[in-house]
Structure formats: structure tokens, C-alpha cells
Amino acid sequence: MNRLRLLTATALLTLSGAADASSAPHWVSSWQASPQPVWGAEFLFPTLVPAALQDQTFRQTARISLGGPRLRIRLSNAYGTQPLRIGAASVAARAGATPQPLSFDSQPGVLIGPGQERLSDPLPLATDDRQALQVSVFVPGPTPVQTFHWEGRQTSWIAPGNQSQAQALSGANSTTARLFLAGIEVEAAASARGVVVIGDSITDGATASLDQDQRWTDHLAARLAPHGVAVVNAGISGNRLLNNGMGESTLVRFPRDVLDQPGVASVIVLIGINDISWPGTAFARNQAPPTLAELQAGYRALAEQARRRGVRIVGVTLTPFAGALPGTPLDDYYQPDKDALRSQLNAWLRTDGPFDAVIDLDAALRDPADRSRMAVAYDSGDHLHPGDAGNRAMAEAVDLEILLGRKGSEPFAGAKRSDPAGRLGADPFPEGKGL
Image 1 (cartoon, rainbow, N blue to C red):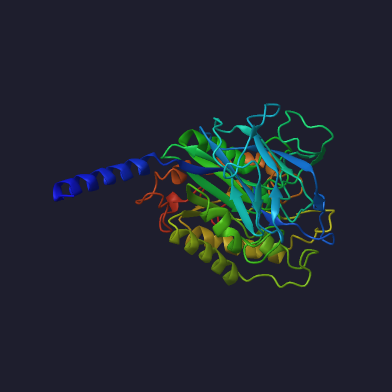
Image 2 (cartoon, rainbow, N blue to C red):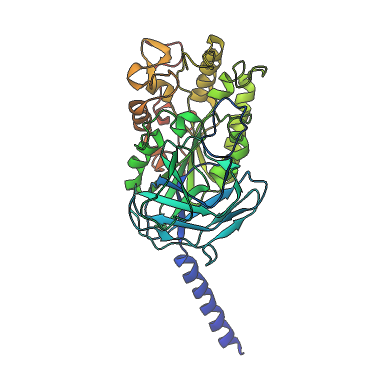
């Protein structure tokens, strides 16, 4: 081949490669249910799932945040100790619609190894923003249930036999836990991106109205979807920053549940109240409470992980919880010394924390007459978790300009610690001052 022909061939290959790159699909995580290990019968709360499944179909509803022309689902065997065999899986565009079969490497089923997850092949099912899908998974069994998501706040069903293609299930029993399904990704415009919200039961939506999509992340998703930004909920009830709780610690699961999500540009972190309040309760009777320095180090470690991956990180102040969980085995969850540590942590987050910006949900939710308590209008009644109105108020306290990259000198740089006006929902009266 002469030099001219060689140069021409090289140029054509380069152009072809550029065209392939530009036409490659852009996948964005649009929904998530973070996996957690199933605990034993001795734990304070029931699992809400059977110990094993055999020749059964599990169907659940998942409302995605962004839609697109194609989707794929992620199934998890994160905490399984043996391979998980999926016999069939399907997605229905809405309740009662005809389910569309999924494939895995062009096969109707898949074997997922212990500690592994698998993506389905792309399914050409066009979806809208905020569309509620139904995902069905059939397991021929016998299948020990070792990985789940406990607090779904959505009714799911377990039905006999392979009913993955059925429009309506027969002989089904209900639960509010989730199995198998860990994520839904959509093909989106090249400009689309995602925000992951990681946290505990407040983010998981522990007291949000059942089947009504009233978590604070649902309201935030409704605000951001018109801008081409997905919001995925990586909350786990009982989660802690530093130590395992009802799931692995945020520090441990952060890469999987945040950084490995396709299309993620920002993460919002609302975690720490269980670190402060579990010690001394039935959850951790003999455990010493963390120090302020230990919590600060944990937050810094999250920030370092995010920045190494080019993801901007937004912190959230811990919300009021005086009088939390009355009349329960956890009625000692709140103590004045625990609230003092929360206040110290919040003051540090507002003034010298490691995050690119701060959402001050403490200021947004607290009772003006008693800063240690949640305002009655926002309280679910247990004095720890916001109700539906509180969840809406949390989402409305978020300054979208920060998440959309319109504030700060760098793309997605966010507010600097020296710029109080750039903080999200900034408290005009710092701790101990003002009204």
C-alpha cells in the first residue's frame, strides 16, 4: 500500500471510529433500590420476605425519573452465597399492560454469581419521565433470599409459577420489600445526567405514604426531570456512615451505589443520624457513640472518593429529632447529648465541611420555637421522619441552580465554603444566633 493510500485508509478509520463513538448510546441510571443483606430472625424488625423462593414470580413497581427510547434493568445477587438463577424477567409499561420479555446475552434467563449483578440486554420500550413500570422476575428455585431492599414503600407481589408474562397475577401475596431488581437505566440524550441521593430511612422514605411516591427524592425528581437530570434514591433504612447497620455502611457501599451509576454527575449525602443515635439503644446497646472528629473524617472520605471520580458532592445538615420514636423499643433514640453532637456536626457542615455545597434541611424542617424539634406540619408523627409534607419541603429547599451547574466557577463545582450565598437553603441564623 503506498503512502497516499495508507493515509487515506487511516483517515477513514479515524472518521469511522469518531462516528461510532458519537453514536454510542448514553445510559443514565433512572431508578435504584440499593441492595442490602437479609438479616436473621433475631433482629428487631422482620424481613417481610420468605426465607426462600421456588417456582415463583416476584413483581414490583418502579417509577423511573427520566424516560427514553430503550431501557435495561440491573439484577443483583450482591449478598448471595450461591449462584442466583433467573428463569425469566419482563417489564410492563404500566400496571395491567402486557409485559415485554427481557433477555440477557440474548437468553431469557441468566445465572448471577455470588456477589455479582447483571444487566439485561437493552429493551426497545419507550418511556416517559416519571413513568411507573412493573418489573417481574421468575425464579425456578429453590432460591434462598439473601439480598433484598427492605423499605420499598411500594407494594410488591409474590405469585406461584412463571407469571412474568401475565398482565395480572393470580394467587399472589404482597410485601413492601424489594427483591432482585437493583436498578433501571435508560438510554437518554447525551446531555442527560444523574443525581444520586444516598442516605438512611429519611431518604428511603420510611414514613412516606405507601404506593404514592412521596419520598423527598420523588419530589426532587419531578423538579429535575424537565432539565434532563435523573434522580435516583440510594437510601437504605437504618444505614450509617461509619458502621454497618441495616446494610453496609455508606463508606463501603458508596462506590457501588453512587460512583458506578451510569451518568452520575452529582451526589447528595444525607447520613449520620443513626451513627449518632443508635449507640445505647436496642440496635447497639454497648456501642460507643462516634466523636465529631470521626464523623468529620467519614464525610471527608466520601468527598475524596467522589472527587477522584469527577463527581461533585453536596452535603445535607441532619434534621431535628427531639422526642423521636416514642412508645417503641427505640424510645431512647433521642438524648440531649446526641442532639448536641448533631448541632456541632451541622455547624461544621455549614462553615467548614468538605462538600461542594450544603443543603440546610435542618433549617428547612425545624420548629422555629424549638430548634431541636421538627415542625409539626412536616412531622410524620414519630418526630424523626418527615411526613409527605415534610418530604415535599425538603425537595423544595434544594436550589436547582447548584445541581444544574449554573453556580460556581467550574462545571458542577458548586458553592465554595467561603461563599455563604452559594449554600443551598443556607440558614440565616447560624446555631445559637438569631430567632
